[in-house]
Every structure is written in structure tokens, then in C-alpha cells.
Amino acid sequence: METYDCKPTLNDSEVLEVCKNGFLMLEGVVSDKINKKMIEYLNENPSNEPTELLDQNWFVENILLNPQAAGAVRSLLGKNFGLPIIISNHRTETPLPAQEWHVDGGSIYGPEVNYLQVFYYPQACPRDLGPTELLPGSHFLFSLQGYMGHYGRIRNSYHATAPAGSIFITVYNIWHRRSESATKGIRNNLKYNYWRTVEPTRDWVIDPGFDIGTADYAIGEWGSTEQTTYRQQFRDRVDSAEMYTWLCGEFEKFKVIGGQGWPKGPRNYRGEKPYGIPKDLT
Image (cartoon, rainbow, N blue to C red; front, top):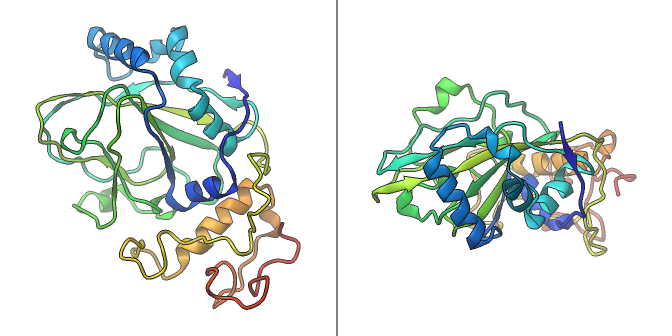
């Protein structure tokens, strides 16, 4: 496996947002010139697995090693992360009905982030072209594949509409599907994985004002209709805090006492620190 290293670009709050939601959208980070070249290549080679792209320098340099995308991957996977070994293209001729909800094969559940699944749109993907639909926070939800297919529209799902040249990074086992499309056309969506090769540590862009004790680990604002409600009450906070702590390389210090204690939320403490946060957790 080839590896790559670069400077991290995400700060503490941005890393925590990935822990909470399970994905990060980077809009329009690939140039129009490369997007056009990519579409021309895919039209000439309409394969569902164009792994030969890994031998194309223009693809590797401008997409796999794209500064914004690689910097985000470096923030989450650490130094010398492994580069993709397979390229897939979810090339579809629209319109089509929505795909069934699913997680990809080989998913492992828990706080560890040892690989990331990444998607690249070489052309704009508006709502009517069937963008990937993601369920925020679902990377913590285990479900047998056969039990997921009967779900239809789920409230507060996220449609990854984006301009050409957008790359979005996901925790591998997040629930996702191709959403329904209404416009006639061709949708290309390239997919590939990056891999961890080192132990986790907090070596992304450190924000001196970030406090692990008072950070908000909930998805959505308190009381908002956008809050995710399909998990056990307050479980999103525990899961997000656990994953963030693991990424910091301090997982052995993680402990939750429950009730009103940390990491329930910044509204639920008095004084400088919330009750129940491990004293040696930095």
C-alpha cells in the first residue's frame, strides 16, 4: 500500500463535527479542468470499477491528493495514511427510484476510525439527479442489512447535493443510499477508501479555545427540530465523545457516569467543568 503525508487542515471543532455526523462535505475543491478531464475519461471508460485510474498521475495528484481532501483525511487518520487500492464508480442513468438504505460490506462498529470512505462528484449533482443520501449519526447505529431495506424517507437525512468537483468524506459504516432522481442524465460518483497506519493522536490543528469538557457533542441545537431523535436519548453525545477521545489517543481515559454528567451538554453543568468528566482527560 502506498502512503501519503501532508499537513492536517481540520481543527478540534471540525474533527468533532465528523465524529457527530459521520461525514464532511468539501464543495468544489477539484478544478473545472480536472472535472472535465474526469468526465471525458469516464465516458470513454464506463466501468463500475475504474481502478486503473490509480495509475493516472493527473487523477492521483488532483483528486486523491487534493490538498483540502488530503488535509482532512490526514486530520482524521494521522500521518502516512494509506492511499486507495480500489476505485469504484456508481455511474447511473437517471431517472431512477431511490436505492435501499445500506452500509457497505466489512463495516465494523465502535469508536475507532481506521479507514474512511470518500466520494467524488466530477459533475454537479443537484437534488433531481439523485445525490447520495446520508443519515447523520448513523455510523453508530448497527442494523442487519435485511432490516434496513424497508425504510423509506427518514426525517433529517442529508442529501449530498454539491457543485462539480466536490469531495465528501464519510465514516465507512454510515447509512447511505442513492436518492431518487427525476432528471434524465448520467450521474458519476467515484468512491474509494483511505487507511490508518499509525496510532491515533491529537495532532490536527489544535484550537487553544477548544475545551473537551464543555464542547457540545449533540447533533443539532438543543430543542431544534433538526436534532436527530432516532437513537436512545443522549446516546449521540456519548458516542461522539467516545470517538473524539479515541481519535485523541486517550481512549483508556474515557469514562461516562451517566445521568446529567459529561458529555450530556454545555447546558447541564455549573462552574467551569461538567460533573463526571475524567480528571486526566485533556
